[in-house]
Length: 227
Length: 401
Image (cartoon, rainbow over all chains, first blue to last red):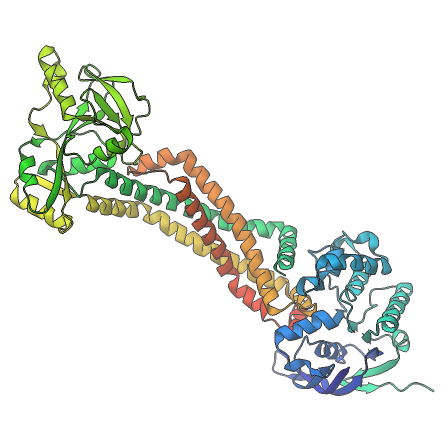
């Protein structure tokens, strides 16, 4: 369902120097895949995730989701695709500071056809899964980094996405909570056939995914299972 | 969809109270200035329109040397007496282009020894030829004015209909009050028939010393209605060419001169308002540019969550609209409050006719000020909103890092 072919992203730095963040990347994954992309900082894995998510335009290559080249879509259609089929977990604090916890979880509903009131119960369930039920009226500034991360993870499932693009999703979490999150991802993956692309530098996390890739200097290569 | 975006905008505004207040304050100042100036200008326009409509005359013929005094009487209602021979009336009536003419004689109540009230302008009119008071008599009083009756201008509210007032030691009953025009000449004057003046003169021989001062066979002005085929200014030229010693004042020109006077008076205030408006536009524009810069990551996250460019654009514009609408409402309230508190002092210092706008007109002025306030916010936020809408999502997210 996700086909990436010869994907390339080049950044031009202020001095005019060009940096190839993603270099001729190709791979294909089926619906329900549970995979990770390992790599050091600056290896291009976050850029790759954003290219697949339609957040930044590539300099070359294609990204097809369910056969549709997403970069051939009009901006509104691409936005709708993100709203209905995808969701993101960013590596940074991505909650909106002016919205409380429940409104942050419900944020995608502000831009789609789903009615807010129909999703409130689901938002509460997701918050309960993340042990954040009691904080639904708190604002991000009143939460710890780990709590904010848990709310962002709850938000990633509010629109029942077919694809979750997660960038260092367990960055601010302790080991116990990290495992709970991975288990939750696995649960959604098995029960809802949700596809997960998880960018991480943690080999332990990557080891729990079905397939692993390694990104080095913009190039992607599969990690062969150790015998 | 709009409700959801409005909710997002509202949440943001509530959490950024200081910035929201700064924008509201900027719009408030503009709206308050705009509302008070437009209300003053409108009240003068209304007064001139209604006053001249009530006067019903295209021309006002007065003694040449009394031109300034006559204009001052007409606009400021200052009691003044100037006279010309009554036989000029027949000459004016015979001029080409004159459709109807009506004489009036001005008397002042100069001392308490003669009259109940001092410093009041008494206007005697010819009930047969008049077109100033007669339309009101026909529609409201529905009968001719009796020789022992007077009609009061609207500003003379201290004198009740039915009460008896003494002018030149002669009693008159108040038969009614004219509607408000805002022109002191009409609102502060007392109207009586020439038969009423005859009653005063009849008492001159009975020890009424003051009445003996009234000039016999003299009139103060001849109000003229012009034939529609002739321009009032042309008929004024005919009159001045054919009759020596008179000035034919074109009433429309008085309006034009008052407008000019008003413009001169308000020009500096208008310049200040324009400067304030431009400053408000710049301030709101700069604040919203800052908001967009500060919220780049937030905008990127919105886009990642499925917000379209239109959503981001509307979100910024809605925030500006909500703030400028609140600023507009408060500005109108403040401007209206200041006007209500100081309107007498303001109009007294301007010394021009005025008529407080009717509820309908006031609602219109409020509406116009609110629309302009909202437009101010929307225009100021337009560029920042477009910039926000066209940010690439990932660039926006990275820019916020």
